[in-house]
Image 1 (cartoon, chains in turn green, cyan, brown, purple):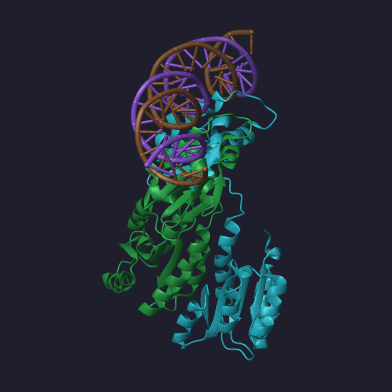
Image 2: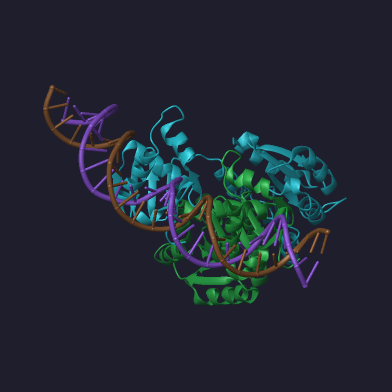
Length: 230
Length: 230
DNA sequence: TTTTTTTTTCATGCTGTATTAAACTTTACT
DNA sequence: AGTAAAGTTTAATACAGCATGAAAAAAAAA
């Protein structure tokens, strides 16, 4: 995932704090939204599903602890990391914050360097969570068998079953030729008898929808999924 | 996972620090091992694969940063959370620690309450994966298995058993396709033989009652519960 | 029991997918 | 180059798979 695709929600009632942190995170290239209290934060979070929420504890309308509890009860935000900001010396807040489900805690005054460092560390974890065995990524192409969806250059679309399975098969053995008989066996099953042209036609569809360059035909043998740059 | 099955490795060269933290974590019921320098820590970690390592930065033999780098280069410890301890005022260490792959950072002097709180917060993620909650919230939809009730946009209503179980199954795997056979197996049980259309009809009921947008059909495969805003 | 609710089946029509046929193009080989 | 074999492409057709309405069957409630 690219930095600009990482969504951060910054919540504080003090505009100064917002400004300085936003500036530093913008510099790093993150996608930063802001809110000025817990209630607004919840709304924006619903729309946005941020990867990371940096939130002041003390705020009007709804404080950070309460907002955090709300977020933690919604599975939508299971993977959202919540980091709190607070003034020094409110020790009990530590406990309350972590009990509410916070992942991290920073005391004011803010040191931008530290915030950025922490953000990087917290997001490192995010990347690991993303891993899912049924997902193949080749260059800009992501094939997700769990969701039965394909993402190509940022656009997500679904494919008919046979087409999807054919694509998945080829991509999972990328750069290796898959023999026609093998394709037949796996995508169509060994009992079903369909003509040989059927495979061709499905390949054709994939070339249309996904991109010609990915599919190389090896005459007399089968097809090969290739990484276009290599 | 039970608390006593959560392995924590505590690394510090000062016996006093070890003692006070170990005491508090023992109280909480965690399985705590200790080491007094980085080298020893690596050895014990290899044997033990801890879930969490709490480690002093400054130590003889091998310091925490170096140990952390070693650990981070070994995929065995991909899921191990590393938390650093250090004396106050060494700001630069923050950055070094996080760059080495630390997940968290606590400054001495140690406040046991805070350590325990942080430990809980860090381990919450670990647990979440396994906890079998019987209340799911996805966006504005709350599904309560204990009450067999659903709350949607503030309105609460109950659903017939099969409908509820189907909804629960799909929502608990939201964004993932659940195959028809899987649905059949879980909602109806492997012995019962009912027609394939039965599933369709129940989906229809859910679409009527809960909202069309949540349910996506994946032809030839099954159904998928989607978060509408995404 | 009767009544109501829930679950399942069935029939129909529609949509998009899978398949085949056929004409055309490329590749491999003599 | 000439020819056969293999693959591509287009279009036409068959049909799987599902939504839908209605209604029977089963289970629960009254």
